Image (cartoon, rainbow, N blue to C red; front, side, top):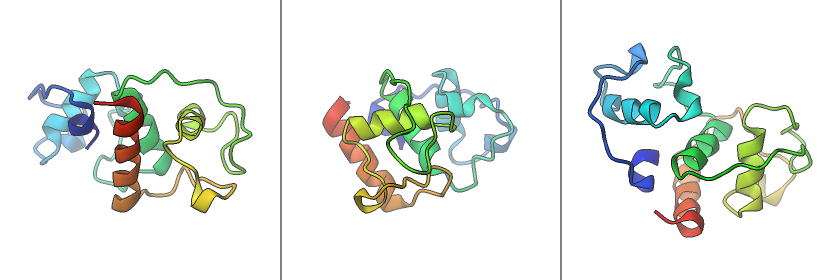
Length: 131
């Protein structure tokens, strides 16, 4: 979804991630790897596992080429300054892409994202950052 929504050119290469090879998403994973999307730097990443909310925000911001600001740790109770994906979560919050749980003080960055949340995030990414 990140590749398509950001308009990245598909490369058709074999992904470095062995778990992504021969799967339906292999070309997409290879494209994200070659684009330098940091979440895909780990070749042992289980690309078939549910995606964490923080990782999805990180992937989308990087795919759209958004420069991330440094996290302060003040946006959500469950996203400390040193948390993985904190910069992405806070950048997306400042940009109006995400707002946490019903505008509450939590984001749940390590919890799986669902399809509706992903669609809403992508829609806001396109609205704010264009294609």
